Image 1 (cartoon, rainbow, N blue to C red):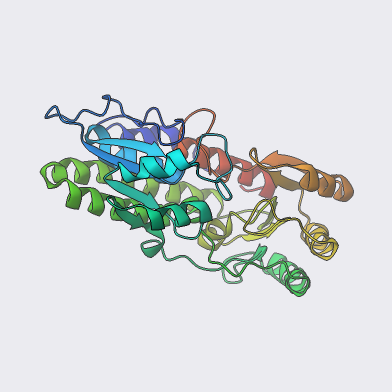
Image 2: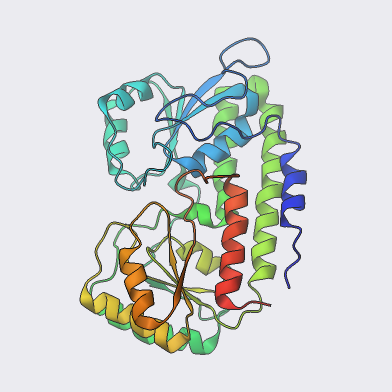
Length: 335
């Protein structure tokens, strides 16, 4: 069994961050700060706009009391296709920094072409984005039979067109890539505000401890499982699958709103049957109708696996990642 001390180890790391990561469930471009935006010198600190929750989490954790962090995407809104309002574009112009992932939110990409003033940080440059289709598998580390079965069905899915040409933006579900993103954010904050470089460095160290702990928990917790294939409602977990030797199969592609064709659904159904999958994972922000229908047809159950595209209802990113690990361990019958 994986040790059940995930929370205590994470919290030791988080306790040294200069301010707790509070107030992240904000309205679009509403300021988040534990000190009303005032830094230790009585100024307003840096104003940073982030594209959606995981980047907001990193920025607030590293910036602490020296930054006022906002999110372009409202809480409980699916960020992929969120359309910025004119007031959102205007608000971007008044910030010092904007941190985002190019290509993930086309509306934000377009808005940034119209904005002058803030320094723009494209985190895709730091996290080594790759391409993932609806089915991703790791032949080297995963179960050989699962890989063979899923691989055969993958060919059917690809032939049916279940593929996305754009790079997969969901890097935040890999805690190792999150460390790379955190380093990029720390560098940008330090360049913009060198007076507080030591605080940013200390906060990064604490955050890195938290993220490294998550990586260790996942590596241990998913090391010995009866199955290595998991089925999700959309292909958000490719980086996680790559990191920990799993196979991801998805009902939809990278975009959760895309509708699977009958051939694509048949290919995923084949994967479920051939790999002995027992759980179809859904998520909170998109309709579970298709995934639930697939579960009904295949005699499987459903459970929530959070892509963490919005702030969790309780806790933070690290808590949501730990909950996801336990859901995966249950679905894959891990020791």
